[in-house]
Image 1 (cartoon, one colour):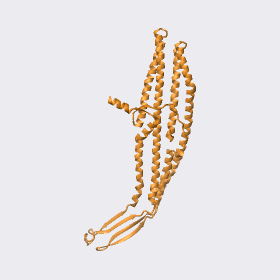
Image 2 (cartoon, helix red, strand yellow; image 1 turned 180 degrees about the vertical axis):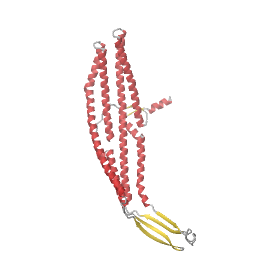
Image 3 (cartoon, one colour; image 1 turned 120 degrees about the vertical axis):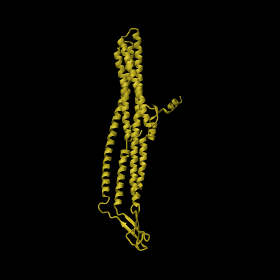
Image 4 (cartoon, one colour; image 1 turned 45 degrees about the horizontal axis):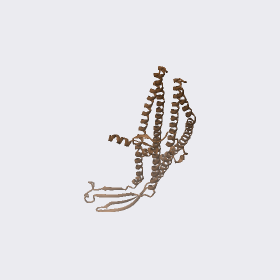
Length: 388
């Protein structure tokens, strides 16, 4: 009993916004990306490795001189320290900062993908619940007809063939009802897997078709990702150009000059950028920047094209649903009601009633499928970066 109460406490109905919030805070892939983003911050310290000093020791009198080792064991000591003459730390920090911003846009894009998946899973559950309601309505209609036919059959007013037809249609409606229940349960399980909690029902309506708002394409994560990545690569080009410049070092040297005495010297050294120093790295990064600029243009073209397609199809689907609600569905309900009354009065055949029932149920399912298709388009709008 206690376990049952706990399971009931863990299962609940959920609305769309809550489902999205829970999914964003739970989903492992987002957490993995957030942890990965922390590693980028460490790249700002890479430039410090260029400041590492060099220390050298030379030992003498190891069997090559008449002097004993104990007399002058150390022949030379040297210490060389590179000097940071250029704003290398600032340049590296700028490049890494843009890389970190690009990674945040990647996370934002992954978050939009997750929201789109939660949206489609949420409305898929509502769709399956609507199909379950339609299956229940179909079962009730067929049950009423079956009970009526059974009475007539008992009175000998209908044929056995007509009774078997009503019985078969009721059994088919029962089978469809069981399948609809299972489909709804599976849809809830899919939503539960996305938010990390058990969901027993969804709080919403399949008829809730939101407005698709205009998008500022340059501010979308998939576009900003390339914008920041290009800036990061260009920042790295400046870093490489700085490393190609002459690098200055100061050197302190202590060297044996005679028996028992040492001399001290101070010197400077500088690298000479000969033989295309860092040019290969600069060429590679320049090519990468141009490639990213082309990918950004392609992403922008695809995003605009997809947005226009979504807007067009979403509008058509909403129009079709409105037409069904305003004209076709009221007529179908009236037609079914009239057919049932006519059949009870024995003015139409069982075949004509079955055909009317079928058309009515098919219209309900068609309407439900159109609504789900519309929500599918809205989920793609969220994937692009749209907001609820």
